[in-house]
Length: 215
Image (cartoon, rainbow, N blue to C red; front, side, top):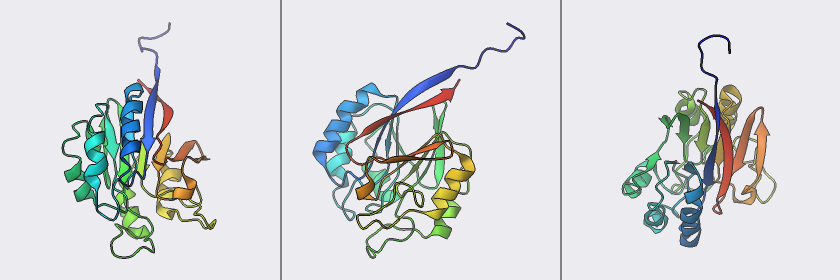
């Protein structure tokens, strides 16, 4: 072997992805069982219904000991989610910020983007606000957002696209390995690609994805 540099190794990591539990305790229990076989867990928002019932699922999910990254949906605020997840020791709540766990980088932005038609109860942000919260995102491994990128896994039951232009711009600019979202129920479990990035609208059933990370 030439030179003194150690070879670059690639680790294949398993990430359990979910979204939109909406107080579904049976789904939460199933996620706890599935989490035993993965390296990370990602929850892409909407644990509650209109700000009610966060504890219904968070108290169950707190049994997961794998590192977990969560963002709020439009049904709960970031402060509500952080308070409800206080007893989930392995979980981190992100919203307009990022973190690195065991060499894997994450960035998270929650809420409904763009503003939904649901009214004042919905935790929403316009595209300018979202662009600001995504502005600090660089070349991360995993982008966690409640709302999908515009035109990607974002078709509602009437076929209308409901995703976010600012999230799409962030994905195109930074090329994360994996984008995990939810929000649009009719697109649950769908996955598409944007350049080298895989975008998954996870849904509540839990989907395990793999990414390769250099070490």
